Amino acid sequence: MSTVEAEAMVDVPVRVAYDQWTQFEDFPKFLPGIDEVTQVSETELHWVISPAGVTREYDAVITEQVPDQVIAWQSIDQPHQAGRVTFESAADGGTRVRLRLDWTPEGLTEKTGAAIGADSILAKVDLAKFKSYVEDPTHQSEGWRGEIHTEGAADGGR
View 1 (cartoon, one colour):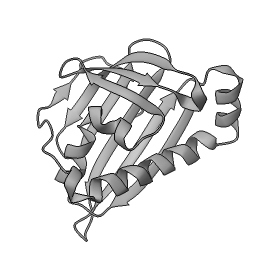
View 2 (tube, one colour):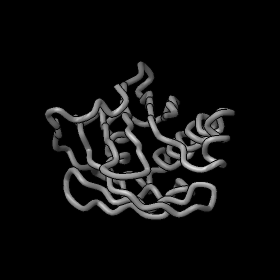
View 3 (spheres, helix red, strand yellow):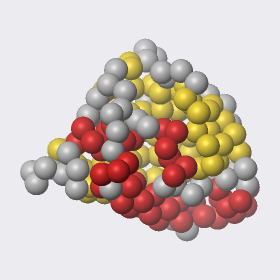
View 4 (tube, helix red, strand yellow):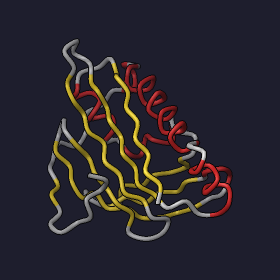
């Protein structure tokens, strides 16, 4: 199991940052390792990813979602992944976005990358891409404002 933590300051209010993060189907627009995300229901997502050129598909469930505060998820099947993103208002009106991702590297390339910290570097790069994307006013949209609290779910990286 590999754990990755990263954070970024984005120059938009917490509501804007949170709302954009809930637009899961937009992730391929700014994250090159994500080919497609389909929101199947309020709590279930289908992912098609291609890290290091290897295509994988998996389903994930949102285990916790509180508007303007947190989104946590875990994969239902392989590859194993659980994550948590928090959003905190900053004094300057911006938002601190914190990501924690627990995942199981598969294959030599992923295991080597995790061992040398490449996954942590990529998480920081991905948050920088999110920052650029969310700070562009043409991409800002209203997100889903409901809450999800799953009893007995894995902690999603808490």
